Amino acid sequence: MTPKAREYYTLRWGVDSLNVRSVESGEIIRFTYRVLDPEKAQPLNEKRNEPSLIDPKAGVKLVIPSLEKVGKLRQSSSPEAGKVYWMAFSNKGRAVKRGEAYSVFLDGTELPKLRDFVAKQKDKGAVLADGKKWAMSYRFTFPGEMVWGKALSAAAEKGEKEAEK
Image (cartoon, rainbow, N blue to C red; front, side):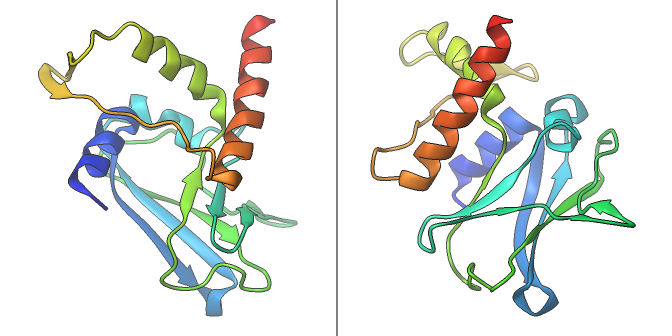
């Protein structure tokens, strides 16, 4: 992960130490993260959000399974600073291979907030976060990023419709 990506996840989501691993002979993909700012990290642990893991190369979107006696394979308690949290994605059929690049996608209900935030920023302006000025950069998906584009479009439309209610 690039230093800018690390900075983004720390500033936007209040997390670091992001890790994605194949476990259980490749049948499960485990995503872990350490919480730095519980308020910013709250959407990651909310039960109503349905995270997924996207592997553009394999063209798959993995979801978190729900087991009869256990429930969803993820933590959904209120995040606490310094603690590590996890979620596990079903990789039945082992579509996602070890060593591949993939993205963890969280519900796009945050996209309208990001657009509002970006619209209020000055060109080349700094962002004040935790009392420090930071350079800000962002990127929306490219048209060639089919899996991400479809997922974000559907989630953003859902979020915008809920905001209109």
